[in-house]
Length: 307
Image 1 (spheres, rainbow, N blue to C red):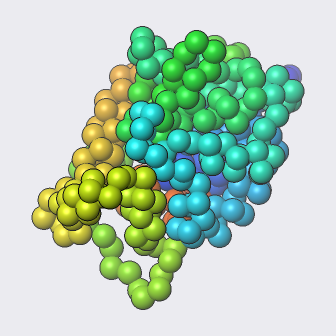
Image 2: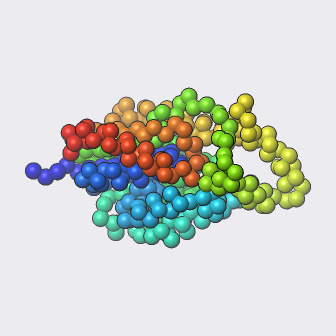
Image 3: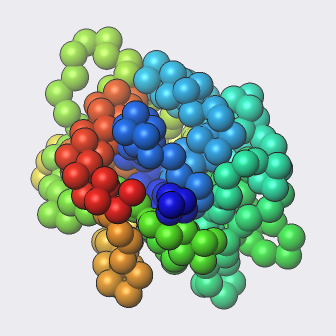
């Protein structure tokens, strides 16, 4: 008997996407290797690293990254449809070796993006893999849209947060899906966690705001500095600017995910417990990856039933 063709659908979730690394590692240790990988947003990025054979390099970087390295990827500008241009992210992917044509890889791969004009999902299955990842991660209001061909594309999480349908269309017999946002609703605004002095890995430094502000004319910069404490409050009493944006995205993606998965369920659904990981907490890769591994270990009996 030939084994079934395995599809791996990696969902969106920003910093929580490091859990995908743990999922892929744990599946490999259990002898489960996907033939088809589809990804949305951060799922597209981690999936691309796996398909390109660069997942160990990405994992090493993620575990060691401080906020200085994270901020170094943010080429901030205040025009062009987003706070971040995205060129530094593309350069980062290329430096890791995630830069070949999709057609040249052994595994089938597709990244999901959303057409900014029509609102339809777009499956990106050809061309340089770093370009399609750049399109899939273009979170509205944060990373500027990407242009591929005649289309302006934004984050695939707007249309297909967990791309089970893509794996099925590409020929998967058994589909394993990873939903990073399954336990987020009800997460409270708790302000910033208490940090130990000099904990560079945990705190977002003022350098990020400095980079944003330096692009503004002097009079506007002064006004912005007066407004920032209101936009980004530190106390638990009210949500800040990014709280509103990211929780709104959480709500939207949760609703879309529930609807899509009701009509297109995978064979095995993995839901890592990531409620305490914020969308921008990229420096918590170690614990996020560990939760991805734990999620697979708990699901092994069901996985073995199908594979």
